[in-house]
Image (cartoon, rainbow over all chains, first blue to last red; front, side, top):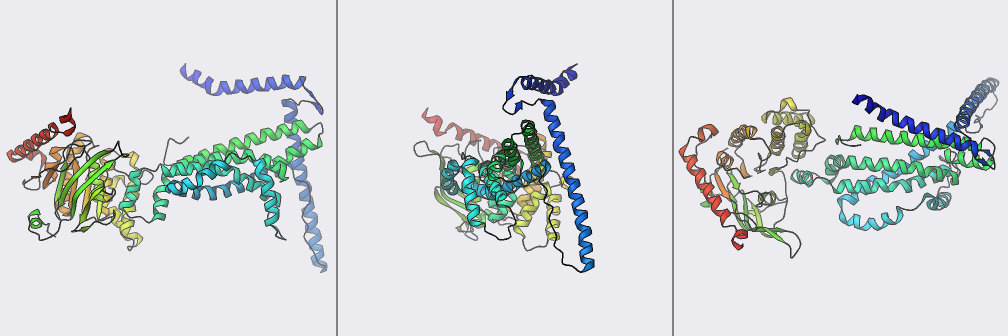
Length: 307
Length: 279
């Protein structure tokens, strides 16, 4: 009897809430007229999603044909002894390519942020002087929106990244760095807190063993603050993913943000439905990233209570 | 290796392994400062086992931290072999009251950390062999790959002792080593420690609130007067033959007499407690 109730609560309640949401959405969609047609309901959004999948398949098929065609031509040219230059397929990125770009961008930004924030956090946590020095800067820059960082980053990237054969697109770099600047803080603050709250007895063990500082950091400080660091990383990745969409919109980095912006600009009857598909995609990926970080945190952490 | 008896020190043959001269220590901000220790004089002869006996909260842990070099005294000095003591290090092995085992390392890992720290010159294999040997000494072979949270209090205590022994310290400092262990485990561990210390011929300082434990393990017992401004009183010599067996001691008249004397002395000390006298 109790089990049934438990089951109803853990599965039934979310299903009910979801059903209610869809019902309200459908009801609203039928009534609201916008400048570019009626607000799409769940059915239309599902159709739009299918359309995006179909488009992706068609594009991949065209790319496949192009590659085989080029391969035939290349062999013919080589056989005839003519010069040959490979040509890149120049089709437009599909919705899934855009998702891939967004993920690559967010992980690049997140990686940059982590590489800066964790060592800096360890430094802040071990030295009260460093913490006192950096704290005002942290407090000053932490609340800054990505929309404020982006123009500065774009101009700096243009000025400083002047390779003739660039490995990365400038828009990609600008978005990634903006993501890094915004997602730095949770990891930095949490790492510093975690390091500062290492059990003093454990540090005394390090002193009795006369461990050099790098062994102390590697064997005692880092493992001990790992649960804190991972909480920070998880928050950072969440912030980074949220910030990314805005950064891509403005930097024109070919990811989900640009997709939303382009849809908004072209204003076709499909627009709203496709943007809603993007909203659900962004939400779903954000949720998956968070669950992934939790799983990772559990795997590496000695603290079984980590949630 | 023969241990040196305290008599030799007094005759000036060898300096004390560890000594405190006029040590004072307090905590807290000015105005609301509490002076924990004041005017502490202490000498540990090489090879001697001294028990510092005190009520809980009387500054035992503070005293031990100062002896270990983990806490600087406000006044006075710490000496090793007649010279100012160096910073905390492996020559003074500490068994912490809370064990201070690293929860993310296994039993072997915790001991290995200490072996690696004191024997960087040995190869990987030799260090591993040393670790296994130490774990065997404290009888934990079966729990080699377990983590501290999977162990009982008594087992954790053994790991902490193995880690301290891994340092090959000349002086072993034990902070209420059996304080957090249940009564049954306590008496079996006491017997084990007694054997271990007799064999290792180390100089040992043991801080405890258990009179029986002090008599069982120590050559000399020094009561710590109740704080604030705690200090060490006159010491009691424990002239009982070794090995000392707990069940046998309980019937020994000399043991009973000594226990009585010490208990009475401690009660008198607590009655003269400055905090109470003022009230």
